[in-house]
Length: 432
Image 1 (cartoon, rainbow, N blue to C red):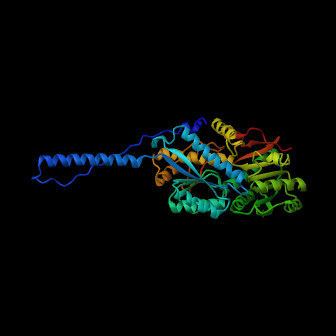
Image 2 (cartoon, one colour):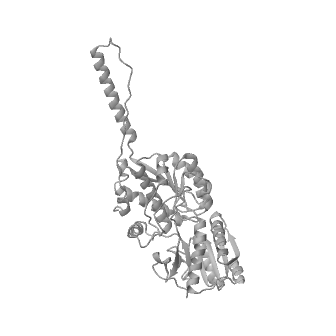
């Protein structure tokens, strides 16, 4: 596998070691020349041994990064891709010479299965740290991320969240947790802003909106942010229907309730499986809304979605983070991922690649595998992103990526297409 173009851009820094000397007690005047020579030789040998020992202590051959994702269970399709994205990032960095300021130290990914359960994710994070992981990435679900963040804080190990949206994860004042993706408030507020801009430009009148969202911290946080922003545009959000994303098997009853309210727009927030169920219910019930509009909807911008719903999602919009399809480096990574993995690279997997890349960049900047030094370097990150964002990856004092931003995508002709804002659009949005 040839090295990634971005990995080759990780500049090595010179490793500077400062040596300090210490003085001893004055020799007795009665000491013989022979004794003085012996003492000098012994001191010199000791110093050389000390220098050798110091060099060995500073030598790093392998740097372990823990990757915690749902590798089994209902989210395994995403979790397996995300873990593969982390491994691909490590492979690319290693192929480009490793962490050059640490004499080419190689990155090793330690993979763990959260099973989609907060308690399991927490225990697996603890295990990986015990096995030598100096940093963690993961985990896709907000509830799991919250538990891993407590482990990272307790152990003083950096944790770079690739995907997990709930604001509350970083509302705790943690010092070791960082998030690449936009949080729930950004997703909900930007989702409302984009909806207003799109409908106004098209002359579509919106006054009532129905919202279906999964009931965990993820879906609830997005709903609350969207609802607050909706009031600014004079929209009424009703009905609001929440559900258990991993327990629900049919959303026809819920969609029938939505149809009775006759909303102008239906907003859906959730994961892949429930997104497919919502689509099937919309197709069966035909609620008559002007737009179907996802916000952080895990299905509506997934490459597998159009085929899995047999075209029923045509025209659906989704506001979500997305890999930058206009970036040649991102295109290269995605093409090689698909070639080796056998599936089109999802944005969530790109996030995992990005998280490892952030850690590698910080290792180069700190020139140390010490978790504290690494954490400080991550906090100072300024790294061009592989994602469609408004600027480079930069973290504020809470650990949020200040330039993390969603965009609008739409299913057009059975493909996921970027449509808004205009600077990232592949095609214009369609409203027919």
